[in-house]
Length: 117
Image 1 (cartoon, rainbow, N blue to C red):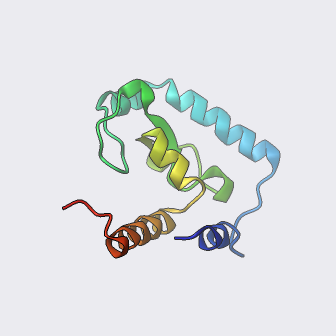
Image 2: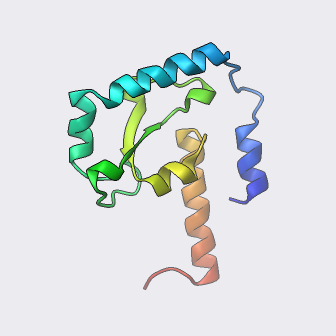
């Protein structure tokens, strides 16, 4: 997916406007959730929830599958441990947009002959 398509997805007409206080509250909830035994157990597995690659538990980040900026909440059902690379690439994409991004990337790799044998 090119930059224009990715930016178009981020500026859809159905995005939710959140007040700064709402965002701060959700980020605070995320900080508290990161301290929980539940989160520590999830990270202890050492696997990125997106690429399934082994990752040192201390290097896993918390990703909101539905980003806070798009109305997501800091609750157990909306967060996943992932490597920094996946978190940085996903940014504010929704799950279906992320899947499309990965699918497009695979198609681009196949088209350019860069795929592994």
